[in-house]
Image 1 (cartoon, rainbow, N blue to C red):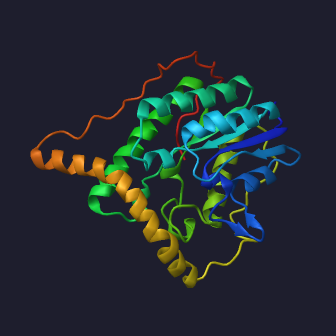
Image 2: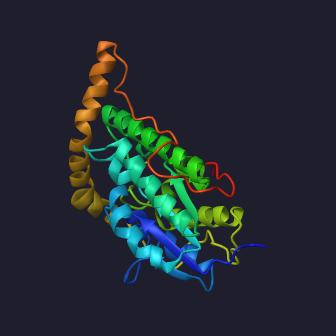
Image 3: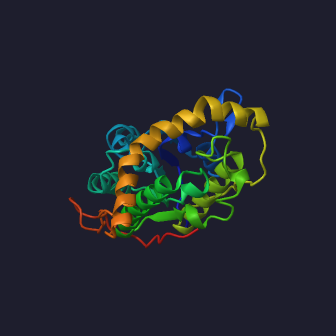
Length: 278
C-alpha cells in the first residue's frame, strides 16, 4: 500500500526558496508546485537563500524535524562548490548527518546530483574546469550518502531539458518557472517510486508567473550578473590557477576528496536503493 504523505518538508538554498519563479508577492518555485501534488499534506519550507550544507544541518534541520515529515526534499551544495573554503570531508559529514536524521525520523528523502552549470552560466576556461571538478567532487559525496541511506536521488544532468535556455531564469543561476516545474515533477516521480502516494500531477504548463522581458536580462546583467561573477570568480581563481599550473607543468590535477560510505555515525537501514537517475 502506498504511503500517505501527511507532512512534506523542503530544505535547501535559493532554488528551493523558489528564486527564478516570481509571482505577485514573492517567489513560488519547486516547493509549492510539489506540495500541490500532495493535497492535504502539511507543507514546511525551511530553505534560505545562500544556504550551505552546514547551515542546513545546524539551522534548517532542527526546524523541520518537529514536523515529523513523511517526505523530505533536500537540494543544497552549489553554494559550497562556489566558495574558496570548500571542504569535501566536512561537507560529507554534514550531508550524511542531515539525511540520516531525516530517514531516522521516518521521512522518504529525495535529493539531487548536480548538473554541469558551466554549460548554463558561461565561464572562462580555467574557472569552468575548476567548477566542473568541484561539482564532480560534490556529486561523489551525494552518491555515497544516497547509497549509505538508500534514499532517492534526481540526477539533474539527466533531466530532459536541463540545459535548455527556457529552463533557466534570467540570472542563469536559478530555474525559471519551467525549470521549477521540471524539478517538482522529478521529485514527485521519485517520491512515487519510493512508495509514496502522489495523487496530483505537476503540470509542465507555465501559468501564474510574472513575465520576464529582455530588459530584465539587461538589468540583471548590470546589477547582479557581473558583480556575482566577480565575487565567485575570486573564490574559484586560486583553485583554477592550481589546475592550470599543474596542467602546464605536466602534473596531475589537485587531489580531490573521494567519498566513501564510511562516515561517523551509524547508517540508517535502507528500504530500497535510490540510484541516481533522471
